[in-house]
Image (cartoon, rainbow, N blue to C red):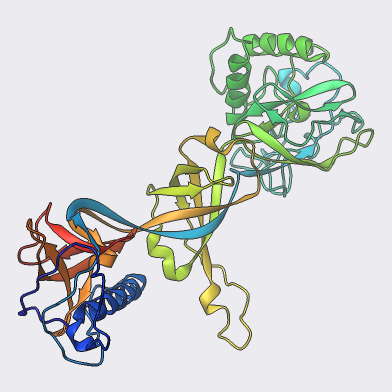
Length: 448
């Protein structure tokens, strides 16, 4: 080993052309220096993997600290000031955001809406709400479009006593199709059933004289966005609203009644991408029709619970895509309920495999192309230090008295040992501090 107090002089030249017939290895501490350097690097890598920076004492089996009589090949590299980022990679899956189930619905009655005095949606008698509306104004439990579908719209429209037959499915989209507001989601009896944007499925017929409600506002918002204006967007269905509905019905191929029925459109929060089609052409327009996802790209990661501190909402990550490309992303959601993994044979009940879900949105969705369900790697930033002094890990030497040092290369070619304290490891470099260690100082590393 080398003592920090022992003067050292090493030239950066070729090895001697000849050596003694019976060399005294004690006269060649440089060989041990090489071994020390290799051991120091190995030990440092172990420390880095463990997340620590404490020094360890390495020994070559003797205490020789004599000056070198040999010369070796070394490169001199500068101490640099840099940002160190420790990234931990976790497997993930690239897909689309959101999941929706869509049900088919029967058509409304093919007749003019009832008069205001004969409103099937209005409470009758003692004021008890009708069968399709809860006291709070929303759909009654178990009724209305989308009941039990996890967000998709479907089911039968409210029963006003004039409902037609369920209808027949006459057109279906293809897997991978993107549907936006106004696009046909499916065909029923030869007419289009389009997509409307909103949070509340339609649950009743809407016409002049119907009670105010959020569904009226939702209808008017969609009609206006599709170019059928002329009314004030509010919760009241007026004559001008009915006029806009008739124009829309004409373009959709419906009878122009001015009445909007619950099954006349599918309501989803935004544009979607069809992921599965369960409906069948020619079948009755009832029940499950298709499944869809959002159009935004999303990476999902099941992050081990022992690494959950890596993920925080809004944090940036690097996503490794198939083919070697990388893309930046932002964590949009971090789960709070752990999911237990498969139980390991002979081990504790899934302790090491419990995970939490983490959702990541790509900053540039086009980077992912059309890939769906593809495996990716996600680099989480575990620790970061900015503007610290760093050297290559293989510049480290183990010292006799313990700890680590570096060989400072003098302008004339000689070297001196400087003891250093180790900090963070990242990307093959290590943070160092110590007396005499400054930015730009040249230190020795083995030639490649």
